[in-house]
Image 1: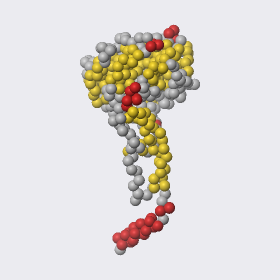
Image 2 (image 1 turned 135 degrees about the vertical axis):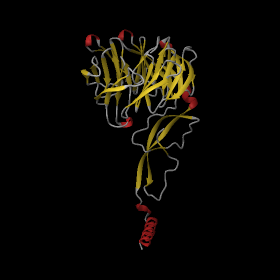
Image 3 (image 1 turned 180 degrees about the horizontal axis):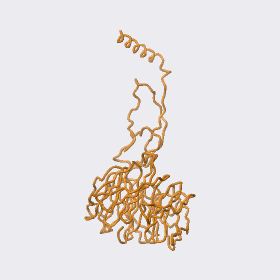
Image 4 (image 1 turned 180 degrees about the vertical axis):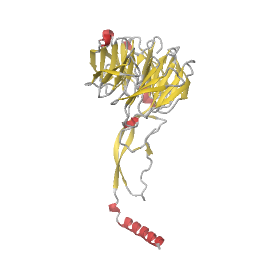
Length: 409
């Protein structure tokens, strides 16, 4: 009897469905559609240009009297910082650029999954030297927030590069008897004569080698002949690798899930030593005096909502130990010089800590009315980037004073 009633209800449902299509509810979804460029045009679009306003400042890199500021996904702004008096001199257009490293007047930059080198010996006449194609991991621009799907139906990965996405609102009937998604797919997928990068860097030069990290891979390049860099190897190193830091014969890789330590006993083949896990979050790292400082930012694409600074003892590279955790607001890059630790807090500004008695940290200053993304502490001078503004501070005698501000807009 129950089976008969159930069958009768199904027949009635189908009858009503067929007679009243106008009442079918319609759902709206945000769909990401790739904006593409041909691979040939992509590789031909690198050029030296006069200075332009930066759309979104990224990482910074310092080499001798010059500062290089990444214009996220677009190129590099070149700044002459002689006497700490910054003046913009050139712009290098490099599509899908995020990272920079310099050795011996040769600048290394990523352009998607290619590595491009430039001769910067004459800063007003920068020249492209070489391009190594397909030597880095495939790069995909960040997916727009709130989209459920990406429509890859018109994208040919053999002929095109994804430069970004547009968002379209599309509709489908919200009915379990209707399959209307077609071809959609789920979204996803310091050595001598060299410069200094910040904690957010994915490029690092150590001696005669360039080390770069992708989301899961460590790449090693032999740059002993700067005119002919050679890729040596690529090895899987972990999940969601985000940053790389080189200190006294070891690489420290920050990932979304933890800190990885690699030995450079053989610098051409980094060897895994250990890993220490933490809560999921965006994760740059710096190291000083066998202490690693790791900021972990949650929210958005970074994972859970915890924001913290971890202090880790790395004196035993095979067995790192977590010493202390400090709650933060929204930490990004960080830097350490002697016993002073600088932590960028995004819209919450820059925090300065006395790390003399690490793992005990004492907050000594907080610059609240600025945006802070990453820092590079140099001898007596701190470089700070955030919100398209480059700031320099003098921090002699435990006093921090602003010495210059350069608006990059």
